Image 1: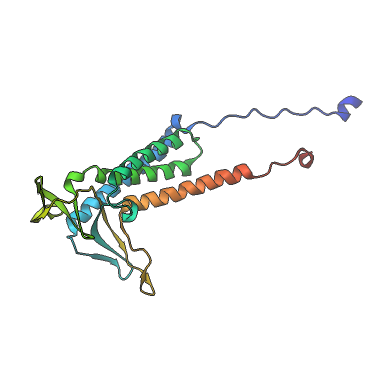
Image 2 (image 1 turned 180 degrees about the horizontal axis):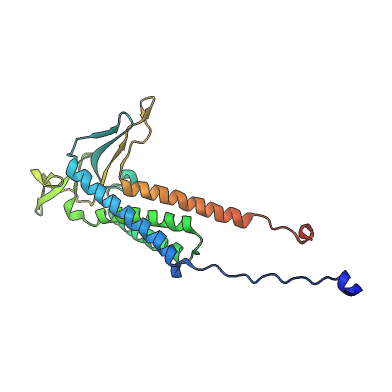
Length: 240
């Protein structure tokens, strides 16, 4: 080795950077997304059907004393009953959410397994509640002076509505026509209290829970991405 080679040793070239495989063309990524979505949707729809068939209006099945019970509640609103009467807006928002989920998946990489699971949970929850809202012929809500009557539509005319107990239409009652709204079937009630104040006053379903968990995982993923991009890169002097 001559003096020049000793003074200026050869520098090995950096290995070529291999781009990450996109999720849209990756079979394991699709399996993560669609298995979570299909299982979540199946559990949500089955549990709603089971609750409606098993629990009569006003009945409650205690799971954990003073903590959690099951009771049927037909919800004309959005997540946890918020926004009653705005069903068309929520249907449109659900469709946009589904499109956004697919967009995020298509622009992710095959290594983002936690993101794919989160998107599967959101997909299952959104489709589960969208299914209920688009089967409105089976769900009727009557608002009258702040109250409401909820049941199955038995008969309607231009001036009246006849509704019965959900889901079989028993004990039909006829009312003056006021409004018909699609509803979502809820049945999980949290009864834990602190100083007589309920910790969670809303009745919800499996789809709501899937949405909350999925959105929380998405936020963690977004925060992790932002934190990773914000990390300072080592300077040339420090790596010399």
